[in-house]
Length: 221
Image (cartoon, rainbow, N blue to C red; front, top):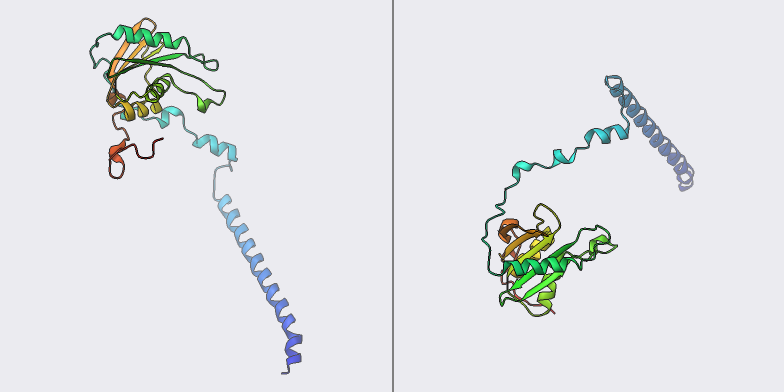
């Protein structure tokens, strides 16, 4: 066979190969359609829409939250300390300066240092809600920026009949810089609960879990 014959027959073989591939693809599509039709025929249920399926699998909040794992906290575990009334009054006063124009939920905090100094804070909200600062964090950051490094008690005041404890981020930061300090919860009428921070944050993440566990200040500005 001459080279010229190969040049003539090669395009013909390419065309046949392409036709074979298309035929194979058609056979597969027909087989898939038959399999799908057979499955539908054997199913007694009416096909459901995507909306129906999503609604059926959606669970309520009560289903997702297993309260059997919650551990009760003794909210009267700490006795009243000296000058507690003055500390509560300072937190109540700080609450009046809260910036809470979005939630209307005003909170005041008073953090006591190991030297007896009282540093106050109030919640400061922002239109970008994630930038809102809680009263406890405001008090803590003020204290740290002024050079205070050891703390004994913190008071949190809100106008609620039930105790209003620090949120998760506040608990973590208080633990980081104040350790297992006393937490006093109060409303405008007086103290509603006393406890240790370890009761609110029983399994904290801290420097002990980091590699080396030195918890030093390297890199702090």
